[in-house]
Every structure is written in structure tokens, then in C-alpha cells.
Image 1 (cartoon, rainbow, N blue to C red):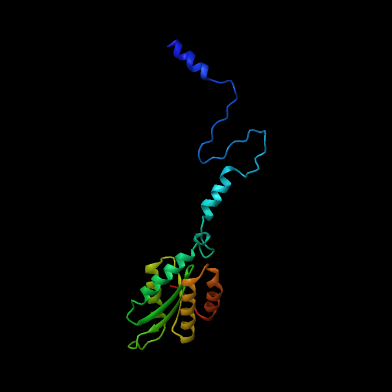
Image 2: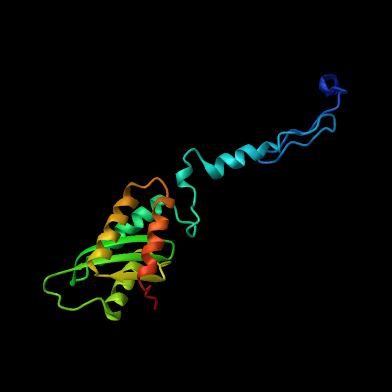
Length: 178
């Protein structure tokens, strides 16, 4: 046993040792050289939040991503088209508001009143509970504009491509909220 203790003691060094860094923590400075790196995790944290594809990063629209807006708009249009009065629906979902253009069936003789807007908003909420308002129209010119905007959203590289046009359209419509 004494021989084993001597062998282990012989392996020990009298040199100063530094603690090995724990994963996920910044290394401690020895005081000999200034730490100019901004910390070991500064680069790793930036890579995690930005990622290799910056288009997946949340946008200023309530944390909504481009892909999220595209998918939500498509799903909302499909949900609204399930209404028996609606032939075609065009939806652009941005943040908590959706622009909705409607083409009614030939059989439907009504118009876009509060009852219809409420039904549309209810359908939108089946897809996304965060939607609080819907700007709904059947005006041919505005429906054409919303349809074009929905097409722009499908091929957009960022939500900024759509935001300005959507804001202009919202100025022409009243947002229905429950």
C-alpha cells in the first residue's frame, strides 16, 4: 500500500494548475493576458440565436417568422373557405391581425357585414388563437390587392417585403375585433 502511495505521489506536479472550464461557462482570466474575445460563449450564443439561416429568426411582427406567416396565411385561407358562403379566400396574416379578401359563392346574396366578419374571425382563430382582428372585405379592388399581397408573401424573402403594402391596405379597411 505504501508503494502505491509513493507511485501516485511521484506523478503529482508542483506546477500551478488552472481549473478546467465547466461546459457552458466562460474561462476564467489568469490575470496575465487581457480577455479580448468577449468571452468564449459570445460567439456561440450569437451562432445559436442567429443560426445559419437568419430568415428563421423571429421578426418584429410579434415574434412571427416569415415561414410562420406564410403557413398561417395558407391555413387561414383554407379554414375560411370552409364557410358555405365563401368560394375563395385570400389571407395575409401579420402579427395579431389578418387581411382577408373574400369571393362569395353565387348562391350567397349577402354582403360583408358584422355577422360575416365574426364568422371569418372565428375561423381564423381555429388556426391561430393569437389573431385578435380581421380586416375583411369583398370589394373587388381590395380583394385583388389582398390576393396579390398573399402571392407576394408566398415568395417573399422577409416580412418587410409585405409589411408596407399590408399597412397601406389596413388604412383602407376597418379591423373587426370581438
